[in-house]
Structures are given as structure tokens and as C-alpha cells.
Image 1 (cartoon, rainbow, N blue to C red):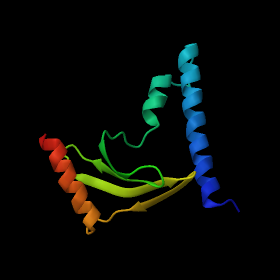
Image 2 (cartoon, one colour; image 1 turned 30 degrees about the vertical axis):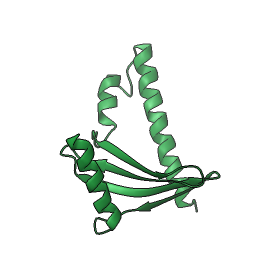
Image 3 (cartoon, rainbow, N blue to C red; image 1 turned 135 degrees about the horizontal axis):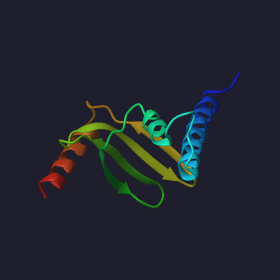
Length: 115
């Protein structure tokens, strides 16, 4: 039985292959699965969302620690997480809206948006 990591990698690979066949057909001026390649392309995503991201770097070197937060159109935090890197290792941890780090994000984002 494949692991979850393998299942996720397989899904990414399937999406990559789908885009490849669509653009190969488009570049060759051919149809893709019996339809215009652009129609196929538009059927691929479930959603296309434009979001802004803020990164708050807290330490560099060993280790590098930062907070990464996605912002909606109004500048509100929609998700946030800690990211730490050192020696090729990575740790990520979700930040809940009830945590102090979340409040820090809101403070710094407000300062950036006002400036």
C-alpha cells in the first residue's frame, strides 16, 4: 500500500503530466482530448486565488526562523505558520488565530499596509 507521501507525489505528477499534454497540444496547434487545449486548460483548476503573502524573518543563520502568512484582499491573515531551516532540515508549524504570534503578524501587517 502506497504511503501518503507517495499518493501526494503521484497526484502532483498526474497534474504535471496533464499540463504538459495540454501545452504540447497547444504548441502543436492540435486538439487535446477532442477539444481546444485552452478549454482543457480552463477545466484543470478547481480554483485560482490571488493572495498576498507576508514573511517576518526573526533569525538567520543557524537556525533561520520566519513566520509566513497569507493575506486576503483586505489584508487579513487567512493562514500562518512558523518555518525554520537549518542544515538542510525544515520544520513547519501552523499558527492558530488564538496564539500570540498571530497577534504579532496582525501588528506587523498593519504597519506595512499603513506605510
